[in-house]
Length: 349
Ligand code: NAP
Ligand code: ZN
Ligand code: ZN
Image (cartoon, rainbow, N blue to C red):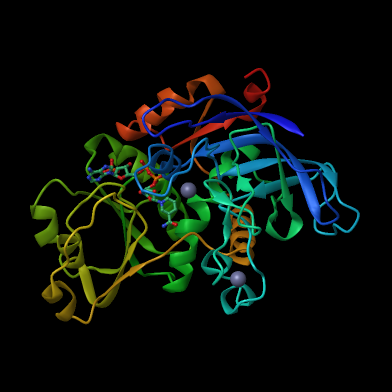
């Protein structure tokens, strides 16, 4: 089935209207008419070849919410007419240790990512959510609870689970002092989710203009990371730091904010490495760790948590022909706090 889409054709070219072939619906597949597709900073990194692994043409988009319009004969998880989501993964081997432990993102054979990747046959390219339709095996489709606004729910499929997963892994709980670094798509979800888990949240930002938003999102305190005094005043204060910055920055300064045995989680993927001093970790047995998206089970758990706690993303809905302008605005740090493409505007593309 031919589907209208938007694709990156080269790292140095704007995205253009494109037509992508979706497979026929197999016995275990669901076909989703996409309603909304979020723009993650990872889409930009990959469309611009910043991670060195880009294959073109590339239809980005891994924050997909839509309506099920067809299901295969063996599908039990979803019915025609229900709301469904697709995140960063569309398949994995399903038998290795990581897959059976529900961490499909770490499939030992290499997961099939939603775009800039291949299906598990390792030849069929995958294409993402900047399109009118997607076909996905039911095991990798998510149920989007009816109470969630579909447009606001789309960014939960990446930004939501990417921040939910480390908060759970590092046992974020009532009374914990959590620092969220970088108020963008991931950062604003981290604030909302940590607040919903009962933590005391401090927002670290380079943008004084975002202070009022941080408060509105639920943060209890705001710290300007451009002011060196911040790092002395708040030294040793935090149990957990969630670092979402997309550009190179000094990890050592943030490690100084951790209390003894505290944990700093890297979520952002700056294109170049940054040095870490051993002494920044030794004093206080601190942990500097990473976290990559989340498995399918955890993604469903996150969606259900968001429905129970009334959490969705703060979004600006755009049309398909505004995607290139939206990329520029994300890079200029001018997004409040996620762009979501209205997928019906791909129809005329
Ligand atoms: P985003 O919306 O662009 O937010 C990034 C934020 O980082 C900005 O809002 C800004 O916050 C801060 N920032 C940007 N440039 C900075 C600089 N030069 N110095 C200091 N702070 C800066 O991006 P996003 O979609 O949230 O993604 C953030 C990063 O996470 C990206 O690298 C993305 O690829 C990565 N990511 C990782 C995973 C994973 O699985 N780990 C999943 C999705 C995305 P302030 O204005 O508040 O300073
Ligand atoms: Zn993403
Ligand atoms: Zn596997």
